[in-house]
Length: 203
Image (cartoon, rainbow, N blue to C red):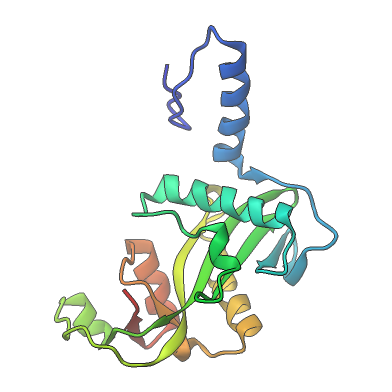
C-alpha cells in the first residue's frame, strides 16, 4: 500500500516494512530526528531554533544528517537533482557549505551554498517578463544559494530568511553579493525578491 501522507510504498504484512514506514513517516511528517550534537557549530540560536554549519571539518554524523535532510527537501520539492553530494564538501574543485536549521531534536531546514560563476544579471522586472539577457561568463565567482528548503510545519516563520542571513554573516558577504540558482521555485523567487534588489543567476 501507499501511505497518503508520506507517499511511501510498503506492505502491512511485513513487520520490517511497517517498522521502516513508521521511521520514514515520522521523519517526513515531523522533520528529521537528530540529537543535539555537542560539537556542532552553532551560528544562530533563538527561542526553539538553532542554525548550524556543515563543511569539510564537520563530523560524519553531521554530514550524514545534512544529506538526509537534503533528500527530504529534494523529495518534497521535486528538485531536479540531489541538493549536494558528500564528496563536494571535501573536493578542492568545489566550494560547498551547508547550513541546517533545527527545532529541538528535529532538523527541519537546509541551505546549500556554493561558489559559482555568475551567468546572468538582470532586474526582477526582466526576470518577471522572462526578458532574459544572453548567458555570459562574467568571471565573477560568488557565493550562491543552490538549494533552500524548510519543512512545511515550520514555514511562514521567517526561517528561510534567517537561514540566508546567518549564512551571509558566516561567509562574510552582503546580500547583493549573493546569487541564486536559476531554478527558482515560486516560494524561492518570493524569498529572493524580498532579499535582493536584482537577480544574479548561476545556472
